[in-house]
Amino acid sequence: MAANDSSEQAPSYIDYEAFLDPDFSPTAFANSLVIATNNPSDTPIDLSTPLSRVLFDIQEIDTHIHNLTTKSAIPLLTHTKEQATAGERIVSEVEAQVASLTDGYERLYKEVIQRHEEADQVRIAVERLWETVKIGRAVGRCLTMGRQLETQMSEVSGGAGAGSGSAKKEDHTAMVRASNTLISIRRLLSASGSGEEGEHLSKVDLITYLQNSVVGPSESSLRNRAQQIIREFAMSSLAPSSNAPTTYAQSEETKSRTTSAVLTLQLLNPQLLLAALQAYLRISLTSSLASITRALDNLSTLDRTLLEVAARCQNIVAIESLLDTTKPPQIPLLDSQGRVKEQSRNLLEPLLAALDTSSLPSFFWRSLAEGLAPRVSNLMARGGVSARALRTQKDRVRDSVRDCVLRGSQGPGGSKGASGWEREAAVMVGSVIGSLGR
Image: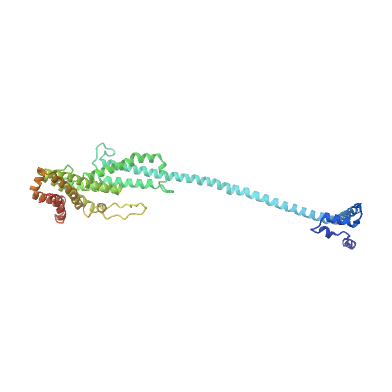
């Protein structure tokens, strides 16, 4: 080993540092060999000597490499064998672990994943069944309310009772019950958001049929019937009328029926109630204005006409009293932004606010006077017998108009005193007498 170490450390004539230099140039090295073996003045250049030198150096390097590999072969082979043996041992261990993992995965797939997939399918089926049950319940509830609405509508119209062929008396209180049922159906159908009770009801053909054949016609019928009751409202006995009650029982029945009509429109849509009441006042004003104009043109009919006008005002006083004592139904009303509106104390306040007045009789007389003044002026401008008769009987006309206002403002049966209406009487008298001159 000492000899080998000494031989390994023996110096070599080959300059390995020059060959290992990063800046080594084969061309420069070859040129240096040629110059070292030849004189610069020689014409023929001898290349065999430098070539032999290069071949000798190559052979020396090859011999050196061969010696090194021969002496290191056994350690290299031993190391390679050890690495191969270790690799085989690792592979065998890894294969055992992989087999164990594969078995574990297959067991987990059967016990967990496969069962989870089956459970997920069951979950989906249960969710769909639950949605079906919810839709079925909502449809059943909607149909029940639809059947209830049909029964209530038959009570409103006085139809035959179940199991009997005889017609039943019309029940106006059923209008309010039917309106509440309609509101319940509306709420159910409008609750169409995600997870709400009526989410899928719009897709059910039976519900569409119910809306078209029961809900819509019932709402229209209730609206028309309530508007008709308000339009025909009459309580005064001053002038003969087919709608005016003649007994106390009939008066109470008229009030009760009108209250039901008012509540029905308020439940269906508060704007419907305001429109119906305003239409009632407008018809009273239009009729009174036309009849007074005709009566002033023919004074022989003045007393009867003013009696009819006083009767209309008494009806307005009666409906004002009825609205004042009727509280709005306890249902939440929403504004355009979805906030709950503050409800009024009675049903009269919204009407007074819409008309911008403090009293319906005052609104009636002042509106009538406003429309009457230009008509009297036109009548006097035409001249003739009617104009002369008005001037001649001016005092009688003044007293008759004043008595009409005071009598009409009392209400049916003199329920309100005549005091407090002198200003309205003066306005009415002024609208007629003011154009007559002196």
